[in-house]
Image 1 (cartoon, rainbow, N blue to C red):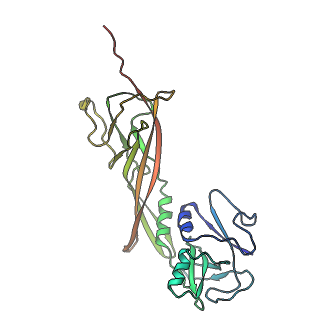
Image 2 (cartoon, rainbow, N blue to C red):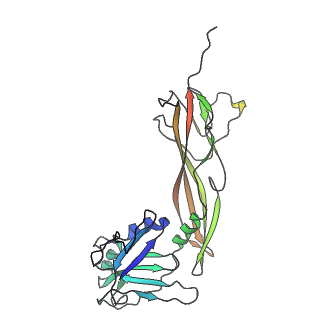
Image 3 (cartoon, helix red, strand yellow):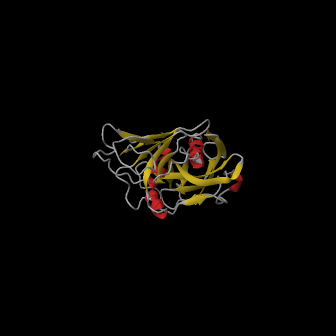
Length: 289
Protein backbone atom coordinates (compact mmCIF):
# COMPACT_ATOMS: atom_id res chain seq x y z
CA UNK A 1 0.00 0.00 0.00
CA UNK A 2 1.26 3.45 -0.78
CA UNK A 3 0.79 6.20 1.74
CA UNK A 4 -0.16 9.48 0.16
CA UNK A 5 0.61 13.09 1.13
CA UNK A 6 -0.93 15.85 -0.95
CA UNK A 7 0.43 19.38 -0.50
CA UNK A 8 -1.53 22.42 -1.55
CA UNK A 9 0.08 24.85 -3.98
CA UNK A 10 0.63 27.38 -1.19
CA UNK A 11 2.79 24.90 0.71
CA UNK A 12 4.66 23.41 -2.22
CA UNK A 13 7.88 25.34 -1.66
CA UNK A 14 8.03 24.36 2.01
CA UNK A 15 7.59 20.68 1.22
CA UNK A 16 10.12 20.61 -1.61
CA UNK A 17 12.63 22.46 0.53
CA UNK A 18 12.32 19.87 3.28
CA UNK A 19 12.12 16.63 1.36
CA UNK A 20 13.98 15.09 -1.53
CA UNK A 21 11.50 12.39 -2.45
CA UNK A 22 12.96 8.95 -3.24
CA UNK A 23 11.20 6.38 -5.38
CA UNK A 24 8.99 3.99 -3.45
CA UNK A 25 10.37 0.61 -2.49
CA UNK A 26 8.23 -1.17 -5.08
CA UNK A 27 9.63 1.00 -7.86
CA UNK A 28 6.66 3.31 -8.18
CA UNK A 29 7.17 7.05 -8.33
CA UNK A 30 4.77 9.97 -7.99
CA UNK A 31 3.83 9.40 -11.65
CA UNK A 32 2.26 6.01 -10.82
CA UNK A 33 -1.49 6.02 -11.70
CA UNK A 34 -2.36 4.83 -8.19
CA UNK A 35 -0.62 7.87 -6.79
CA UNK A 36 -2.09 10.39 -9.15
CA UNK A 37 -0.60 13.58 -10.47
CA UNK A 38 -1.55 17.17 -11.14
CA UNK A 39 0.03 20.41 -12.24
CA UNK A 40 -1.74 22.10 -9.33
CA UNK A 41 -0.75 19.89 -6.40
CA UNK A 42 2.37 18.02 -5.37
CA UNK A 43 1.77 14.35 -4.62
CA UNK A 44 4.39 12.45 -2.65
CA UNK A 45 4.25 8.66 -2.58
CA UNK A 46 6.47 6.45 -0.43
CA UNK A 47 6.35 2.94 0.96
CA UNK A 48 5.76 2.72 4.71
CA UNK A 49 6.70 -0.02 7.14
CA UNK A 50 4.58 -1.78 9.71
CA UNK A 51 6.71 -0.34 12.46
CA UNK A 52 5.37 2.60 14.38
CA UNK A 53 7.61 5.66 14.59
CA UNK A 54 10.75 5.07 16.56
CA UNK A 55 10.55 1.27 16.57
CA UNK A 56 13.47 0.84 14.21
CA UNK A 57 11.97 -2.36 12.73
CA UNK A 58 10.86 -3.26 9.23
CA UNK A 59 7.98 -5.09 7.64
CA UNK A 60 5.18 -4.77 5.12
CA UNK A 61 3.80 -1.31 4.35
CA UNK A 62 1.58 0.27 6.99
CA UNK A 63 0.90 3.66 8.49
CA UNK A 64 0.80 4.85 12.07
CA UNK A 65 -1.96 7.19 13.21
CA UNK A 66 -1.50 9.44 16.19
CA UNK A 67 -4.90 10.39 17.57
CA UNK A 68 -5.02 13.67 19.41
CA UNK A 69 -7.46 14.74 22.07
CA UNK A 70 -9.89 17.61 21.87
CA UNK A 71 -8.31 20.53 20.04
CA UNK A 72 -5.17 18.50 19.29
CA UNK A 73 -3.99 17.71 15.74
CA UNK A 74 -4.44 14.18 14.41
CA UNK A 75 -1.40 13.10 12.43
CA UNK A 76 -0.35 10.22 10.23
CA UNK A 77 3.31 9.11 10.21
CA UNK A 78 4.80 6.89 7.51
CA UNK A 79 8.38 5.71 7.54
CA UNK A 80 10.11 6.52 4.29
CA UNK A 81 11.55 3.51 2.48
CA UNK A 82 14.17 4.00 1.24
CA UNK A 83 15.31 6.79 3.52
CA UNK A 84 16.13 10.20 1.95
CA UNK A 85 19.71 10.97 0.88
CA UNK A 86 22.24 12.23 3.42
CA UNK A 87 21.87 15.87 2.33
CA UNK A 88 18.18 15.91 3.26
CA UNK A 89 17.49 18.36 6.10
CA UNK A 90 15.72 15.75 8.23
CA UNK A 91 18.58 13.28 7.74
CA UNK A 92 21.08 15.95 8.75
CA UNK A 93 19.01 16.60 11.87
CA UNK A 94 19.14 12.88 12.68
CA UNK A 95 22.91 12.82 12.22
CA UNK A 96 23.30 15.69 14.68
CA UNK A 97 21.19 13.75 17.18
CA UNK A 98 23.21 10.55 16.96
CA UNK A 99 21.85 8.96 13.82
CA UNK A 100 19.86 6.16 15.52
CA UNK A 101 16.41 6.65 14.09
CA UNK A 102 14.58 7.21 10.81
CA UNK A 103 12.82 9.85 8.75
CA UNK A 104 9.02 9.80 8.61
CA UNK A 105 6.60 11.77 6.50
CA UNK A 106 3.82 13.37 8.54
CA UNK A 107 0.41 14.70 7.60
CA UNK A 108 -1.87 16.38 10.15
CA UNK A 109 -5.50 17.39 9.85
CA UNK A 110 -4.45 20.95 10.65
CA UNK A 111 -2.77 21.17 7.26
CA UNK A 112 0.74 20.60 8.66
CA UNK A 113 2.85 18.29 6.52
CA UNK A 114 6.46 17.47 5.82
CA UNK A 115 9.08 15.11 7.20
CA UNK A 116 10.55 14.55 10.65
CA UNK A 117 13.40 12.47 12.06
CA UNK A 118 12.39 10.32 15.06
CA UNK A 119 14.90 8.44 17.27
CA UNK A 120 14.60 4.66 17.62
CA UNK A 121 12.39 3.66 20.52
CA UNK A 122 10.76 7.08 20.82
CA UNK A 123 7.08 7.76 20.40
CA UNK A 124 6.32 10.60 18.03
CA UNK A 125 5.56 13.82 19.80
CA UNK A 126 2.21 15.32 18.94
CA UNK A 127 3.34 18.13 16.62
CA UNK A 128 2.16 21.59 17.43
CA UNK A 129 0.23 23.54 14.86
CA UNK A 130 2.64 25.27 12.48
CA UNK A 131 1.74 28.98 12.88
CA UNK A 132 3.45 30.00 9.66
CA UNK A 133 1.32 27.50 7.74
CA UNK A 134 -1.75 29.10 9.31
CA UNK A 135 -0.40 32.52 8.35
CA UNK A 136 -0.07 31.42 4.72
CA UNK A 137 -3.59 30.04 4.82
CA UNK A 138 -4.81 33.43 6.07
CA UNK A 139 -2.83 35.24 3.35
CA UNK A 140 -4.30 32.97 0.65
CA UNK A 141 -7.79 34.01 1.75
CA UNK A 142 -6.99 37.67 1.03
CA UNK A 143 -6.85 37.10 -2.77
CA UNK A 144 -3.98 39.58 -3.22
CA UNK A 145 -3.68 40.99 -6.74
CA UNK A 146 -1.30 43.01 -8.89
CA UNK A 147 -1.21 46.83 -8.91
CA UNK A 148 -4.39 48.68 -9.92
CA UNK A 149 -2.63 50.98 -12.39
CA UNK A 150 -4.24 54.42 -12.53
CA UNK A 151 -1.50 56.01 -14.68
CA UNK A 152 -0.40 55.53 -17.36
CA UNK A 153 -3.86 54.74 -18.73
CA UNK A 154 -4.24 51.94 -21.26
CA UNK A 155 -6.27 54.27 -23.49
CA UNK A 156 -3.88 57.21 -23.04
CA UNK A 157 -1.49 58.64 -25.64
CA UNK A 158 1.88 59.90 -24.42
CA UNK A 159 4.72 61.84 -26.00
CA UNK A 160 8.45 61.23 -26.27
CA UNK A 161 10.37 63.58 -23.99
CA UNK A 162 7.40 64.42 -21.75
CA UNK A 163 7.61 63.34 -18.09
CA UNK A 164 5.21 60.55 -17.24
CA UNK A 165 3.70 60.28 -13.76
CA UNK A 166 2.92 56.77 -12.53
CA UNK A 167 0.62 55.92 -9.67
CA UNK A 168 -1.71 53.16 -8.51
CA UNK A 169 -5.11 53.16 -6.84
CA UNK A 170 -5.04 51.80 -3.31
CA UNK A 171 -7.58 49.06 -2.64
CA UNK A 172 -7.41 46.27 -0.02
CA UNK A 173 -6.69 43.58 -2.61
CA UNK A 174 -4.26 45.58 -4.79
CA UNK A 175 -2.37 47.65 -2.21
CA UNK A 176 -3.54 46.90 1.33
CA UNK A 177 -3.34 46.94 4.19
CA UNK A 178 -5.56 43.90 4.62
CA UNK A 179 -5.75 41.41 7.48
CA UNK A 180 -7.14 37.90 7.87
CA UNK A 181 -7.14 35.15 10.50
CA UNK A 182 -6.78 31.38 10.40
CA UNK A 183 -7.36 28.95 13.28
CA UNK A 184 -6.44 25.30 13.85
CA UNK A 185 -5.78 23.16 16.91
CA UNK A 186 -6.61 25.99 19.30
CA UNK A 187 -4.08 28.34 17.65
CA UNK A 188 -5.18 31.53 15.89
CA UNK A 189 -2.84 33.51 13.65
CA UNK A 190 -3.46 37.01 12.31
CA UNK A 191 -1.73 37.96 9.05
CA UNK A 192 -1.56 41.48 7.58
CA UNK A 193 -0.51 42.23 4.00
CA UNK A 194 0.56 45.55 2.49
CA UNK A 195 2.45 46.54 -0.63
CA UNK A 196 5.93 47.75 0.27
CA UNK A 197 7.06 48.72 -3.25
CA UNK A 198 6.04 48.70 -6.90
CA UNK A 199 8.62 48.01 -9.62
CA UNK A 200 7.75 49.47 -13.02
CA UNK A 201 9.35 47.85 -16.08
CA UNK A 202 8.65 50.45 -18.73
CA UNK A 203 9.32 48.20 -21.74
CA UNK A 204 11.95 50.49 -23.32
CA UNK A 205 15.02 48.58 -22.08
CA UNK A 206 15.72 51.09 -19.31
CA UNK A 207 16.21 50.01 -15.71
CA UNK A 208 12.99 49.39 -13.77
CA UNK A 209 11.61 52.30 -11.75
CA UNK A 210 11.13 51.16 -8.15
CA UNK A 211 8.65 53.23 -6.14
CA UNK A 212 8.24 52.70 -2.41
CA UNK A 213 4.81 54.36 -2.35
CA UNK A 214 1.71 54.41 -4.54
CA UNK A 215 2.95 57.40 -6.54
CA UNK A 216 1.56 60.93 -6.80
CA UNK A 217 -1.44 61.66 -9.05
CA UNK A 218 -0.74 64.26 -11.73
CA UNK A 219 -2.52 67.60 -11.64
CA UNK A 220 -2.58 70.27 -14.37
CA UNK A 221 -0.80 72.72 -12.07
CA UNK A 222 2.34 70.52 -12.29
CA UNK A 223 2.75 71.45 -15.96
CA UNK A 224 5.74 69.68 -17.50
CA UNK A 225 7.42 68.91 -14.16
CA UNK A 226 8.58 65.38 -13.35
CA UNK A 227 6.79 63.29 -10.75
CA UNK A 228 8.20 63.90 -7.27
CA UNK A 229 8.35 60.21 -6.40
CA UNK A 230 7.40 57.85 -9.26
CA UNK A 231 7.96 58.87 -12.85
CA UNK A 232 9.62 58.07 -16.17
CA UNK A 233 10.51 59.78 -19.42
CA UNK A 234 10.37 57.88 -22.69
CA UNK A 235 13.24 58.92 -24.97
CA UNK A 236 12.15 56.90 -28.03
CA UNK A 237 9.03 55.57 -29.67
CA UNK A 238 8.29 51.83 -29.51
CA UNK A 239 9.17 49.57 -32.42
CA UNK A 240 6.10 47.39 -31.92
CA UNK A 241 3.41 47.33 -34.65
CA UNK A 242 0.79 48.85 -32.34
CA UNK A 243 3.08 51.69 -31.22
CA UNK A 244 2.95 50.65 -27.58
CA UNK A 245 5.59 49.84 -24.99
CA UNK A 246 4.75 46.71 -22.93
CA UNK A 247 4.64 48.02 -19.35
CA UNK A 248 4.76 45.66 -16.37
CA UNK A 249 4.11 46.79 -12.81
CA UNK A 250 5.09 44.32 -10.09
CA UNK A 251 4.04 44.91 -6.50
CA UNK A 252 5.93 43.39 -3.58
CA UNK A 253 3.57 42.44 -0.78
CA UNK A 254 5.01 42.19 2.72
CA UNK A 255 2.96 39.84 4.88
CA UNK A 256 3.51 40.00 8.63
CA UNK A 257 1.91 37.58 11.08
CA UNK A 258 1.67 36.81 14.77
CA UNK A 259 -0.03 34.27 16.99
CA UNK A 260 -2.94 35.89 18.79
CA UNK A 261 -2.03 36.37 22.44
CA UNK A 262 1.67 35.76 21.76
CA UNK A 263 3.28 38.69 19.94
CA UNK A 264 6.75 37.10 20.11
CA UNK A 265 5.65 34.14 17.96
CA UNK A 266 5.66 36.10 14.72
CA UNK A 267 7.31 36.50 11.36
CA UNK A 268 7.00 37.85 7.84
CA UNK A 269 7.60 37.01 4.19
CA UNK A 270 7.11 38.70 0.81
CA UNK A 271 5.15 37.81 -2.30
CA UNK A 272 4.83 39.52 -5.70
CA UNK A 273 1.89 40.19 -8.00
CA UNK A 274 2.02 41.67 -11.52
CA UNK A 275 -0.17 43.79 -13.80
CA UNK A 276 0.55 44.66 -17.44
CA UNK A 277 -0.64 47.11 -20.08
CA UNK A 278 0.53 48.72 -23.30
CA UNK A 279 1.60 52.39 -23.33
CA UNK A 280 1.09 54.33 -26.57
CA UNK A 281 4.05 56.69 -27.08
CA UNK A 282 4.54 58.87 -30.15
CA UNK A 283 6.52 61.88 -31.37
CA UNK A 284 5.02 65.33 -30.99
CA UNK A 285 3.72 66.60 -34.32
CA UNK A 286 5.03 69.98 -35.48
CA UNK A 287 2.77 71.99 -37.76
CA UNK A 288 4.58 74.16 -40.34
CA UNK A 289 3.13 77.69 -40.68
